[in-house]
Amino acid sequence: MKIEAKLVQQLRQKTGAGMMDCKKALLESNGSLDDAIDHLRKAGITKAEKKGSRQTKEGLVYSYIHAGSRLGVLVEINCETDFVAKTDGFSELAHGIAMQIAATNPLSLDISSLDESVIAREKDIFKEQAKSEGKPDQIIEKMINGRLQKFYQESCLLEQTYIKDADKKVRDLITESIATLGENISINRFTRFSIGE
Image 1 (spheres, rainbow, N blue to C red):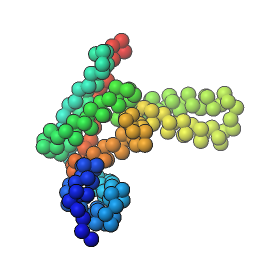
Image 2 (tube, one colour):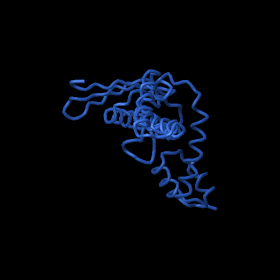
Image 3 (cartoon, rainbow, N blue to C red):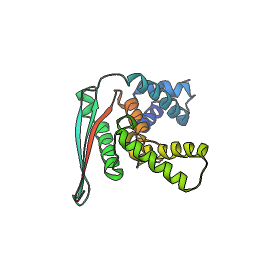
Image 4 (cartoon, rainbow, N blue to C red):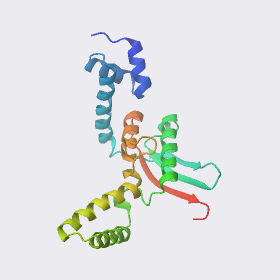
């Protein structure tokens, strides 16, 4: 099957993938643009998982100041090379992450970096809430776990629903960026500043 260059270009514009990857995906999907996008996404996630163990020593510290200058964010996002750190795609990712932090004020990067005392306090609160609702003991434990998962989704940056796309988490955004930019990417740290806080 012959794949037209115009179709390859369309797929490149939609996905940001390399020319040969786009051509291969179109061949695999018999020229269907939608199927080729799915193929690239699946392949990209697999590639991203393989790149996840590589060191990230380059990157940038990105600053975001919200309109009115009463709220700001500094976030350090790392990648493998200085070349990728200077790309528009990497800057767009940093901007999106900074806006996420400004909007949601997460307590930590992920579940493992959440302070144990915070988790213990939340468990106690959830337990008391469930008891006050008169729930039996076997239900209380399930309720605590369910409410704890919701707490993680609200409080841990990587677990949050991405503000620009409700169908993905911030973790998914990072994975997609790894696939698109071709390097491992990690968020190292962040700080949110707000007047009066």
